[in-house]
Amino acid sequence: MFRVPFLVLLTLAIAFGGGIYATQYAIRYSTGFGAISVGAWQAFPKAQTSDADPYARNHRAKAGQLLLGSAEGLAFSALTDSEGNRFDPACNYVVSGAIPTARFWVLTAADGDNKPLSAGAGLPSAYSSWTALYNKDGSLSFTVSSRAQPDNWLAVPADRRFKLILTLFDTPAAGNSGLIDLSMPTIEKAGCSDA
Image 1 (tube, rainbow, N blue to C red):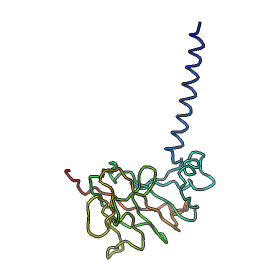
Image 2: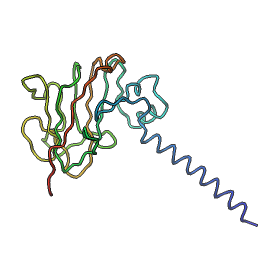
Image 3: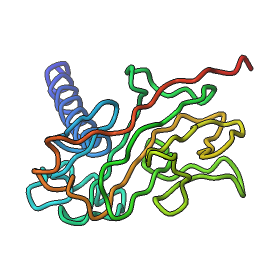
Image 4: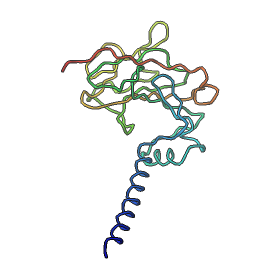
């Protein structure tokens, strides 16, 4: 007698619950469609334009992120090294090569929600085109590690996963024509601690 209504209610609960969960998941974890990848780096050039898909718009609105117009800049993020291995906070990584042409750029480590990470007070948590030490040939080299390193050391917490974000401001890479011959710095693992 109550079996059919119970099954109908159970089916509706699963359908509505599953639909709400899937929508929340898509909004929380989808950064949008139309990604471009250059090595380990990935960017979404249309994410901050009027051409952005609804998931990308909602994701950025909910996160409260500053959006750059297509002529203002482009943010690249890397979750892995150049070999495709996810970053391990117990390891050292070397980010090296030339930064794409930009009036100003910033390299920082962030958590999964794109919030900047700090390994502690007074430790270097970001570099910019004004603060980095350049090599003689104009290239750059950064060591990303939880342990102190010489020269350009980007400090990350030893107990948290991270990703790297390279934001280029006022760059030709933000336009479609600049993406054709774009080259990004490589990210190589340079050893891990045993502890």
